[in-house]
Length: 332
Image 1 (cartoon, helix red, strand yellow):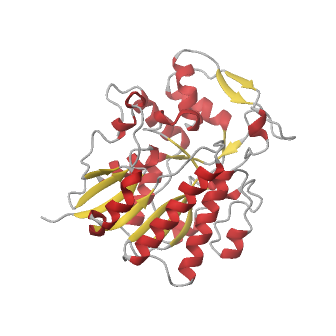
Image 2 (cartoon, one colour; image 1 turned 135 degrees about the vertical axis):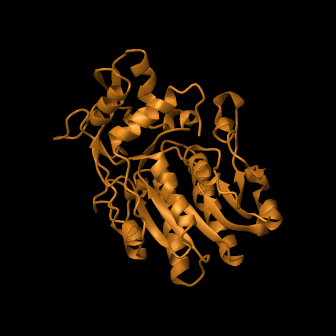
């Protein structure tokens, strides 16, 4: 039986590996992964170890792969990126987050292959317009990200929308603006791990949870708010887009609710059977000027497109995450 081939860039990473976990049981699919595994001790390779992978492509070999076996692929799910909001090399950020995304978009358009990509809530900057996922070029051009990562993502979103308006897009083109994703398979991400992942070792050791102080008048310490979205919800949305090829556009992906970091600390402590104790620490000076105090993902456009899966409540997602973190055989 001939299987349908798809390529997932960043497939060994956090969101990418959860997408593969969501798709891997489909016997009609073969999944090729493009990624870097880096040090074996980091365990990134384990994110894929439970799943049937048809091919593995180093990023430097991707152009040749696309011109060879890649011509059999029906879709590219592009999750690969430089995801650090504090990365100092802006050329590297733009080369990967914009340049590679642009090249894959153009290749998919030229070869009539579908293209689904990861955007980010970082494109919104302070969220002065309440995180409205208006996909018009004028709205996208008006966004003011706070860091080079957010800018690189915003630049590609605008490129894709303009190409689509010109009639030069792939047969399916869909981007998701991921908000604050947490959950299984993020342990390799270092400083870019979610706050939930970062505070877990201290909870296990019975130490106080360390959260950043607030530097904004009217926002108490711990009351900074985020739209925390469970990674399995993020993967479910990508899988839905893949299985719904007539949906095009740029959409928010979150829970639709803003919760405080104090809420997160309390919920994760409760899931571990502990009482929360929080110490508020100084925020590094380099982060203070690019810190978002509030995020919330209006989900109306994605719901109107037909995505009906309910979001995972923060308390339920963290309880499931704690089960993963305490499992003798983790990774999805």
